[in-house]
Each structure stands twice: as C-alpha cells, then as structure tokens.
Image 1 (cartoon, rainbow, N blue to C red):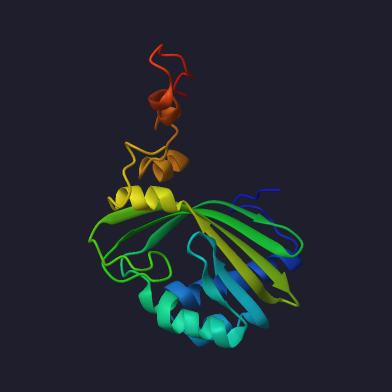
Image 2: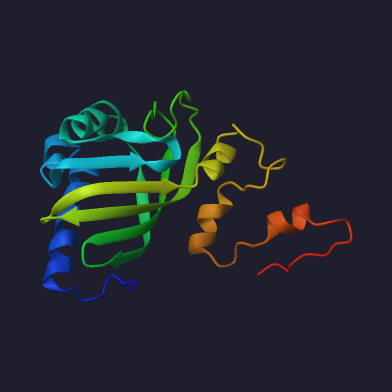
Length: 194
C-alpha cells in the first residue's frame, strides 16, 4: 500500500522510517559518513543501479560514501517526495531530485566533468531492513533524461525526453505521448495527448 505523509504507521514501520530518516539526514544534511553507517547492517550494500556504483559491506560502503557519494553531493540539491510505501521490512520512496551539476559526481555521472547545468530527475529508492537496520539500498533513476538535459545524448534523435519526465510527475499538464507521436508514421496516427 502507498501511504501519504499523514498515514499512521505501525510501530515497526515507524521504527524503519525513523532509521531511514536518520540515514538520509546523515547523508544529505550533516554529511556524516559514520552516522549514516551507524544505521546499516555490517553486510549492508548500496547499488546505484543505472551506473553500477556502490559497495558491499560496511568497509566498502564507507569508502563509497566517503570518497564518492557523501563527498560529492551538490550544494544546491533538493528533493520532492512523490510517494512512500512501507511494508514489513522495506521502504520504497519515489522522489524528484534537482541540483546544478557544479562538481564531479562519480556516483551519478562517472567520467563526466561538471557542466554547470541544472538537472531534474525522478528517482526510486528501495530500502531493505534487517534487524532494525538498513541491509541494502537499490537506487534507480532515469539516466537517459539526465543525459538529455546535459546534452550528452540527443533526445530529438532517440526515444527519450529530458526535464519534462520529472516535471510530468508533479504537473499533470505536461503532455504525455509526445515521443509516441514523434515516432508515429506520417499518417498522423497515434494516441492523443493526455
């Protein structure tokens, strides 16, 4: 079930949410690697799925956080949560993230020097818990829309879009099916915009 922020959680769900919120606070606000690690199991792992970056086990996660992730969080990063679902042993959050690509982001754009461009993208975090701590995080985001926004791939030549992907999540007025119509035969057939 997807819960709104006003949802009342069971004590076990609230305990998971409290751990997750301490973890995120340590990453994004205090930027304290050890505080983030304190919320995790000894064999925890991180997997930034689109770029296959992360670490397995606390020593590897410590290195990943200290060298790449926490050390390279853009100073103007902000997020808007779209949904949160809490089960018996897992939290899934869907969010929009925004920031300026003002520094090296090996965890997000390995090998791409800072462009100074503003980026907005959708992301999903799947956070597994065991024994009251985070056992793993699977982080997914729309890498193609990010690459279009940075001008690294041509959204006009490929079946992908840019910033409008994230904006559509919050604004139902952003047209849908534009890629389908663009790729439709010249007869003009294809679904209408929603």
